[in-house]
Image 1 (cartoon, rainbow, N blue to C red):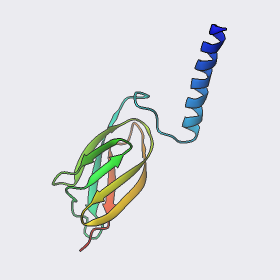
Image 2 (tube, rainbow, N blue to C red):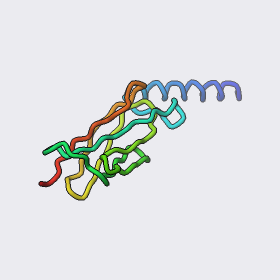
Image 3 (cartoon, helix red, strand yellow):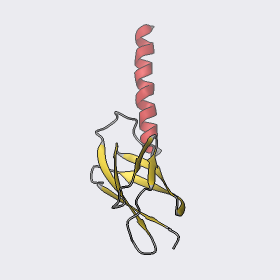
Image 4 (cartoon, one colour):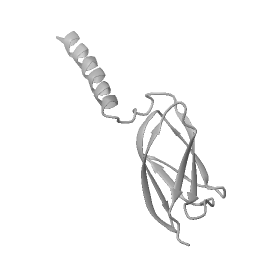
Length: 112
């Protein structure tokens, strides 16, 4: 019986992992090599850099520098990214990270 329980547990884990992939859920931490992604935040009205914006993805966050950039290590998957800043409304967008993803551009509606 113990062997059946172990095999069933492994089969369930594989099944749940496959369902999560089909549903578009991000891989769990450790499920792949992290990819360093640079977020570039700009104001949409003039494309100027947006310093001091906070970018949140899952449990990770970074704050943009004077050039409107910050970096985050993420595994492949699809996520909701949330961007906040004092001079514009909160901005949420869906991002997909692949091995080819290096830069995510974020255009925020800043106040003039």
